[in-house]
Length: 363
Image 1 (cartoon, rainbow, N blue to C red):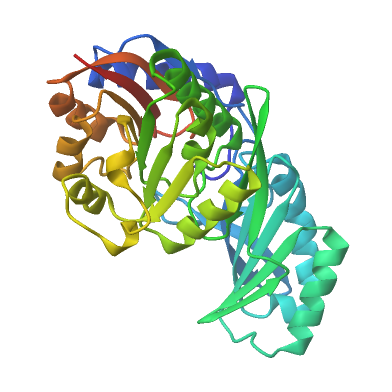
Image 2: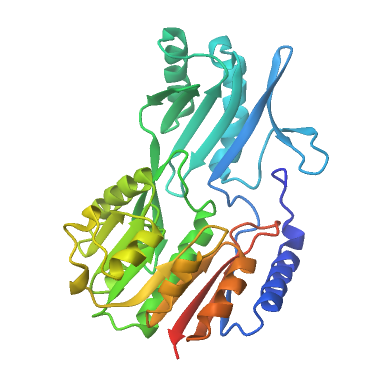
């Protein structure tokens, strides 16, 4: 997909996804469908830059032909990105120091109106006062929140390396620091619906006096939104950058019952079986009353150890970005648990990708 949208076929493609999900997992219960807006839904966009004579423009590569395709606007992206693209490129063409060996431009925007632009070069920009002056002028002229200049082993911030998103869910506003080059949900509108569904599962089925454990918590996206529906929450994440961002978000949202530790899923499994870890020195695992586990694994799904771990809990909230590995994992999980509710989140319209969720209860 090269930034095109097809609103006239949106409902048909969503129906196709629903059918494919139900073929893979035919026994889904109470399947809720959460639509995307048919255009202007991506909060992230990355483009290669091509230079021909005096002209510079964005390109993408066709996945089938491998040919480069010029892209001047991107109706998939948030309106703020789509509108900024031609203005940014016009300004860069008029500033030779910004144009010289510019290789790629990345955009990271928020529903709350912030914008971060990353300019990536195939030349050194360190200690380049002319580049710095031009980038500062560009930032002021275009009114973007931040600009980052990148080159090999170089990173220059004007003025910060993140944006702050505000997601509105169930009459609440959640604040999330979203760091450049770190994972965030690309479709912010659907991300709000995912948080709503997860919160509804917890509120509808789980005793709020019990505790939640989350694996793969990222920047605390789900754990922060779920925290009010549990007594305490312990979340784990292996990425140092994501853990730091989660701590920022915990403070920004004034959450007091959530602890995030830098640990892999297999390590927390070992810790729950009694193995000691220095990173848990200040966490009394034995004092937690874990009844629910939340998992949002990568496309590979759950590894064998984690798959055997999750069935030890009364309730499982499983968010999946790959229905094939979800179906595989459920073969094992459903030996002890039953699907109570399920959901399809259309994070990636007009693609084959399906984001889904299942809430399971021990039989």
